[in-house]
Amino acid sequence: MKVAARALSAFCLLASLWLTLACSPANHTNPTGQVNYNTPLRHVIVVVQENRTPDNLFGSDLFNPNGRRLPNAHLARQGSCHGMPITLAPWRLDACFDPDHAHMRPYPSWVNMYDGGKMDGACNVYVHTNGCQTIPPGVVPPNPQYTFVDNAPDIKTGFGVLEPYFQIAEQYGYANYMFQTNQGPSFPAHQFLFTGTSAPVSFNDPGDTQKFWEWFAAENLIVKTPKPNGCLALAGAYILEVAPDGTESDGYAPPGENPGYPCYDHPTLTDLLEQNQPQPISWRYYAQSYAGDLWNAPNAISHICVPSGEACTGPDWTTNGDVALTPGQVLTDISNCQLRQVNWVIPDGNWSDHSGAVGALGGPSWVAAIVNAIGNSWNASNHQCDYWGNNSNDPTAILITWDDWGGWYDDVSPATAIGIGYKNGNGSGQQYVYGFRVPLLVVSAYAKPTYTSNLNHDFGSILNFIEYVFGQNGKPLGEINPAYHYADFFVQDTAAPPNNYSLYDFFDFSQPRTFTSITGWKYPPSCFINPTSCFQSYPMDPDNDASEGDD
Image 1 (tube, rainbow, N blue to C red):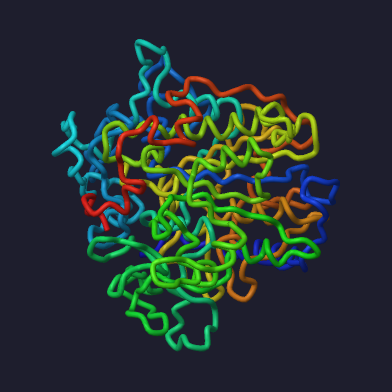
Image 2: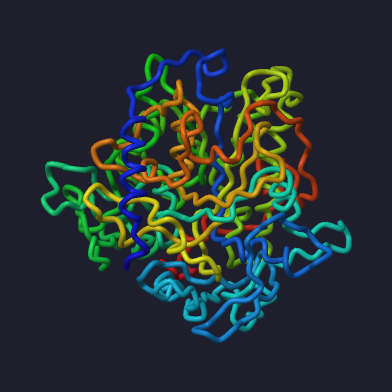
């Protein structure tokens, strides 16, 4: 299906601007030294949480007038089911139920809720209740898709469960109009966040006679358990791909594999980082301790994973250690002054914010632990690295987003954005992008205080921001795939040079701010370094759990 098309004049202006800005790789010295970057920033951390919309995650802003407030946030108190009003109701963050968040199959959840742009079909989104059958309390409210997270203060602590999120949003940056770039669940969303596309093959691949570079992986893996993902998937596993005409099928077949097999080979942002001269830009992807996990985007890129049996064996995966199979290691790397320049941080199921299991309440504490580790890094060890940036020239930007809508109601149609966020060179791509709104929080010593952005952002904005941070002279590092543009190219919030990169509106680089620790967390940082000391047994990745049934 299609979302609103970009106005021709706006598209031509944007394309012209980007073509003008295209450049060869920039020169860099030591990442902590004095270099000619576009900004003072030296590190970027992309924290990816799971399955929430702004209305769902921050709806208590409207529900409790004496509770937390988000200045200027666009949030809805009431939804609609095909014209019938439904008032959003408070519910637990760790709800036992899980609204489906597929694009079209096996349930047409995204298509139903979008309802041609009216955003009134969330009542037709299927709700998985497996977790309610065995884990009390098993009550499912009426219209569970139209609930928001209850942030009422706890009697003992005085804080609501979302206190860290509200503090971050209040003190730093919050986006009213951040859209996931794809229209479905976690697998394609994580691909877009890592590579700028979920296309199964690169442009003009000599073995691809059907132009599958115009298709997109659109759903999660379909296979019987056990369920390794990406290039480690079992024989017979496949992911449905959406064609330019909007239909879904099992699509592209890598050599020797069945159609739809989820092992791809196309450029990623990490290729652009590694190709920088004279010194590559370092990166790390912190993910689950299972190489075949659905949320682990690099495992679906064959030149990073280089599959061999049940293991990924590529140099980025092993020798270089760019894929760290322990999420909590990011806290250790920060304290040991070993943070890479670009970092993706993927949670464990216990702190992902994914619905479906009572007791999984660690998300806000996890994000607070990362923010506090960066903010207090000057005193974290004898090394005295300063990733906040008050005492040295080594500051960090933390971009916190949620990978998809999770099946929850949201009142903003993606058709209200300025056209689409990502459009292939020949116009294909309109069948699959934008998706629904997800939250975005921006934290940095240079983030504007209490800032709410009303510009349109999407996952491509994050990739484009990284390209500009590590470019120079007002130009980006380059483009992930200049031959056939990905989401990093088609962003909407560009401005006139030298402010011409995504997410610029969140920043003021004239003077760094002192850090104030985030409080109100439920779990201390040690819980994320040693999870078994604090959390019950729970699927590392609920989307990869066969009992959920939403694959």
